[in-house]
Length: 158
Image 1 (tube, one colour):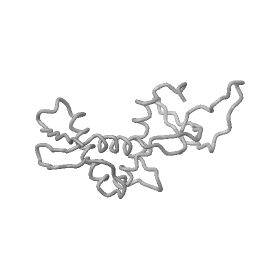
Image 2 (cartoon, rainbow, N blue to C red):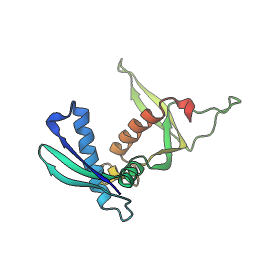
Image 3 (cartoon, rainbow, N blue to C red):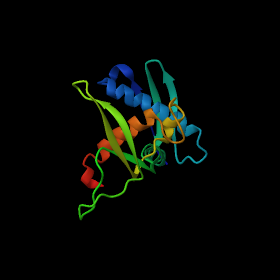
Image 4 (cartoon, helix red, strand yellow):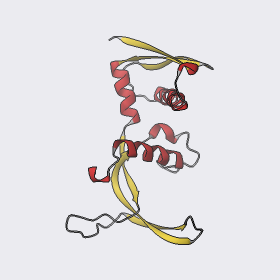
């Protein structure tokens, strides 16, 4: 199978988002090396202060995408309860009440509803998340919410 080599130099990347993406790719490939079931070639050839070089084949790229976008069953927080077609409220897995401070400084109690949903897993972030408990953590939640908003921006697509 044919492999391709990609070399990135930080100064040639157009924005900080591109540099962050490069750092994320390095992080994912380092985590992937620890897995016992890898498919194809997806590896870091060289890392320097000014950039990095990678080698991929088709199966390796597919494996990286499978890792990044792997799904898991988990609770999803929503501000309002879900309703079925008849307009009846669907019972959530659980609810959580939190104190919320408005822009004017008033404190109120807000109820959040948690429903079962397939969410992006983000397993490659778990070992780096200092707030981790089980398969959740603040950094993982941030990544999941970010990924979810890109892939499913409209709640009606559930």
